[in-house]
Image (cartoon, rainbow, N blue to C red; front, side, top):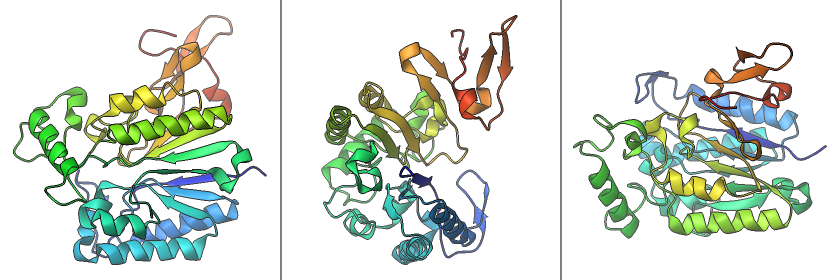
Length: 305
């Protein structure tokens, strides 16, 4: 059986009473660790070789107990699965734990929050997983005077007029991304990602990219988008090796399907349409749960096939 990749995101565990998210959605902080355990057990039964958590392992409400909460989650993974577990950095993680403590805690020993590995540990498996750091340029996790924090502060000041930089009031469209709980991948990391994708293409591997903050504006709310999403897309969308980009952060679970070679693009699955070419052409809304056959059908979106 081919190696399998398990993905989950935004566990946001905290040892605190139930409450509400930033957007007012009811949250069950302690229960999230139980859900993590069940997800990992299910993946173990399915023979998953690698698991990637796409960021926000803990919630910001963990506060002083943040590191202990991370350690509890790591223990749950270790008890539930024999798969290798890797982590992308989330904003809730890094707002509570300094980068120099968080990275080694999550198994990143080279001082960087981005890395790559072959699925199942085997190059001939044909899949390279590239995990990116959405906060390489950001406001959290580094000392206030750090050059990347200073750059992040300058970018926010130039693009968000609100006194509360976590507020997108008055911003429109993709400009809503200029909030403090997002961040940027940065030029150095994107050059590294470009080289990784090029090397994978040479080896005839497919690449799955994992980020915490989305880089595709069609599959997220605009206030949950990476600051330098255009630069990221210019790298990822032009790589023949990249077959998927998976992100956390936006909890609604949107999707985008892109058949670049055929010029066919579908927006998130809520608005996904399928064209029936038998007889008179008709356009149908497809269920949010799609089969592989559905994904292979032609589509008509935004006035074009």
